Image 1 (tube, rainbow, N blue to C red):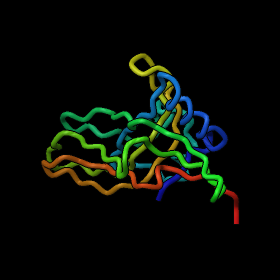
Image 2 (cartoon, rainbow, N blue to C red):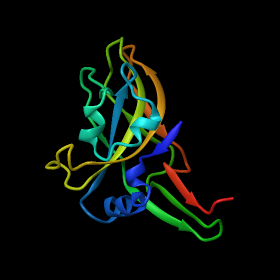
Image 3 (tube, one colour):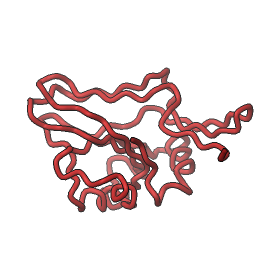
Image 4 (cartoon, rainbow, N blue to C red):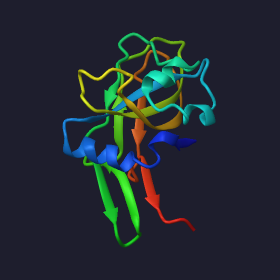
Length: 158
Protein backbone atom coordinates (compact mmCIF):
# COMPACT_ATOMS: atom_id res chain seq x y z
CA UNK A 1 0.00 0.00 0.00
CA UNK A 2 0.99 3.63 -0.36
CA UNK A 3 0.23 6.64 1.78
CA UNK A 4 0.76 10.39 1.96
CA UNK A 5 1.94 11.51 5.39
CA UNK A 6 -0.83 13.33 7.27
CA UNK A 7 1.23 16.50 7.80
CA UNK A 8 2.09 16.62 4.09
CA UNK A 9 -1.44 16.19 2.72
CA UNK A 10 -2.04 19.92 2.37
CA UNK A 11 1.44 20.76 1.13
CA UNK A 12 2.98 17.84 -0.77
CA UNK A 13 2.47 19.70 -4.06
CA UNK A 14 4.21 22.75 -2.60
CA UNK A 15 7.23 20.73 -1.43
CA UNK A 16 7.39 18.89 -4.76
CA UNK A 17 7.31 22.25 -6.59
CA UNK A 18 10.10 23.59 -4.35
CA UNK A 19 12.24 20.56 -5.22
CA UNK A 20 11.51 21.20 -8.90
CA UNK A 21 12.30 24.92 -8.82
CA UNK A 22 14.92 25.43 -6.09
CA UNK A 23 18.00 23.72 -4.66
CA UNK A 24 15.78 21.55 -2.44
CA UNK A 25 15.53 17.79 -3.09
CA UNK A 26 13.12 14.93 -2.66
CA UNK A 27 15.03 12.27 -0.75
CA UNK A 28 14.42 8.52 -0.70
CA UNK A 29 15.14 6.08 2.12
CA UNK A 30 14.34 2.43 2.81
CA UNK A 31 12.85 1.01 6.00
CA UNK A 32 13.51 -2.47 7.33
CA UNK A 33 10.67 -4.91 7.89
CA UNK A 34 11.73 -5.81 11.43
CA UNK A 35 10.07 -3.41 13.86
CA UNK A 36 8.20 -1.61 11.08
CA UNK A 37 5.23 0.31 12.42
CA UNK A 38 1.80 0.06 10.82
CA UNK A 39 1.08 2.50 8.00
CA UNK A 40 -1.50 4.27 10.14
CA UNK A 41 1.28 5.13 12.63
CA UNK A 42 3.92 5.93 9.98
CA UNK A 43 1.75 8.55 8.29
CA UNK A 44 1.52 10.52 11.56
CA UNK A 45 5.25 11.40 11.61
CA UNK A 46 6.01 14.90 10.33
CA UNK A 47 9.80 14.63 10.02
CA UNK A 48 12.30 11.91 9.22
CA UNK A 49 13.75 12.30 12.74
CA UNK A 50 10.32 11.57 14.25
CA UNK A 51 9.75 8.64 11.89
CA UNK A 52 13.08 7.03 12.84
CA UNK A 53 12.56 7.74 16.57
CA UNK A 54 9.70 5.22 16.53
CA UNK A 55 10.26 1.47 16.19
CA UNK A 56 10.90 1.61 12.43
CA UNK A 57 14.54 1.36 11.38
CA UNK A 58 16.27 2.53 8.25
CA UNK A 59 18.17 0.01 6.10
CA UNK A 60 21.69 -0.73 7.33
CA UNK A 61 23.22 -3.01 4.71
CA UNK A 62 26.80 -2.35 3.63
CA UNK A 63 26.95 0.46 1.08
CA UNK A 64 23.42 1.72 1.80
CA UNK A 65 22.87 5.46 1.41
CA UNK A 66 19.79 7.56 0.93
CA UNK A 67 18.99 8.49 -2.65
CA UNK A 68 17.64 11.61 -4.34
CA UNK A 69 14.46 11.30 -6.40
CA UNK A 70 15.55 12.48 -9.86
CA UNK A 71 14.16 15.65 -11.45
CA UNK A 72 10.84 16.08 -9.61
CA UNK A 73 8.07 17.58 -11.71
CA UNK A 74 4.59 18.74 -10.90
CA UNK A 75 2.10 19.00 -13.73
CA UNK A 76 -1.55 19.86 -14.04
CA UNK A 77 -3.63 17.84 -16.46
CA UNK A 78 -6.65 20.04 -17.19
CA UNK A 79 -8.28 17.38 -19.38
CA UNK A 80 -8.55 14.96 -16.45
CA UNK A 81 -8.48 17.60 -13.67
CA UNK A 82 -5.44 16.07 -11.99
CA UNK A 83 -2.21 17.21 -10.37
CA UNK A 84 0.57 14.69 -11.02
CA UNK A 85 3.78 14.48 -8.97
CA UNK A 86 6.36 12.68 -11.08
CA UNK A 87 9.84 13.01 -12.59
CA UNK A 88 11.16 14.70 -15.73
CA UNK A 89 12.99 11.46 -16.50
CA UNK A 90 11.26 8.90 -18.68
CA UNK A 91 9.46 6.27 -16.60
CA UNK A 92 9.98 3.98 -14.97
CA UNK A 93 12.22 5.81 -12.48
CA UNK A 94 14.53 3.15 -11.07
CA UNK A 95 16.73 3.65 -8.02
CA UNK A 96 19.45 1.05 -7.49
CA UNK A 97 21.51 0.49 -4.35
CA UNK A 98 24.85 -1.37 -4.19
CA UNK A 99 24.86 -5.15 -3.76
CA UNK A 100 23.45 -5.93 -0.32
CA UNK A 101 24.60 -8.92 1.71
CA UNK A 102 21.91 -11.52 2.41
CA UNK A 103 19.63 -11.22 5.39
CA UNK A 104 17.88 -7.84 5.55
CA UNK A 105 14.18 -7.47 4.76
CA UNK A 106 13.17 -4.08 3.39
CA UNK A 107 9.46 -3.25 3.58
CA UNK A 108 8.91 0.47 2.88
CA UNK A 109 10.29 3.13 0.59
CA UNK A 110 9.85 6.64 2.02
CA UNK A 111 10.12 10.00 0.24
CA UNK A 112 10.88 13.23 2.07
CA UNK A 113 11.48 16.91 1.34
CA UNK A 114 15.06 18.03 1.99
CA UNK A 115 15.14 21.85 2.14
CA UNK A 116 18.95 22.20 2.05
CA UNK A 117 20.64 19.08 0.65
CA UNK A 118 23.95 18.40 2.33
CA UNK A 119 23.20 20.54 5.39
CA UNK A 120 19.66 19.58 6.49
CA UNK A 121 19.29 17.33 9.51
CA UNK A 122 16.58 14.68 9.83
CA UNK A 123 14.66 17.13 12.06
CA UNK A 124 14.39 19.49 9.06
CA UNK A 125 13.46 16.82 6.49
CA UNK A 126 9.70 16.66 5.94
CA UNK A 127 8.18 13.19 5.64
CA UNK A 128 5.98 13.13 2.52
CA UNK A 129 5.07 9.69 1.23
CA UNK A 130 5.65 5.99 1.70
CA UNK A 131 4.87 2.73 -0.09
CA UNK A 132 5.24 -0.95 0.57
CA UNK A 133 8.10 -2.85 -1.01
CA UNK A 134 9.17 -6.44 -0.54
CA UNK A 135 12.93 -6.84 -0.85
CA UNK A 136 14.97 -9.49 0.94
CA UNK A 137 18.65 -8.78 0.40
CA UNK A 138 20.55 -11.68 -1.15
CA UNK A 139 23.80 -10.22 -2.49
CA UNK A 140 22.15 -8.53 -5.46
CA UNK A 141 21.33 -4.84 -5.86
CA UNK A 142 18.10 -3.70 -4.17
CA UNK A 143 16.01 -1.82 -6.74
CA UNK A 144 12.91 0.34 -6.39
CA UNK A 145 10.97 1.55 -9.44
CA UNK A 146 8.36 4.28 -9.76
CA UNK A 147 5.91 3.93 -12.67
CA UNK A 148 4.69 6.25 -15.38
CA UNK A 149 1.96 7.78 -13.23
CA UNK A 150 4.50 9.19 -10.77
CA UNK A 151 4.25 8.96 -6.99
CA UNK A 152 0.94 10.71 -6.44
CA UNK A 153 -2.04 12.06 -8.32
CA UNK A 154 -4.43 14.57 -6.75
CA UNK A 155 -7.85 14.71 -8.34
CA UNK A 156 -11.48 15.50 -7.63
CA UNK A 157 -13.41 13.03 -5.49
CA UNK A 158 -15.93 10.69 -7.07
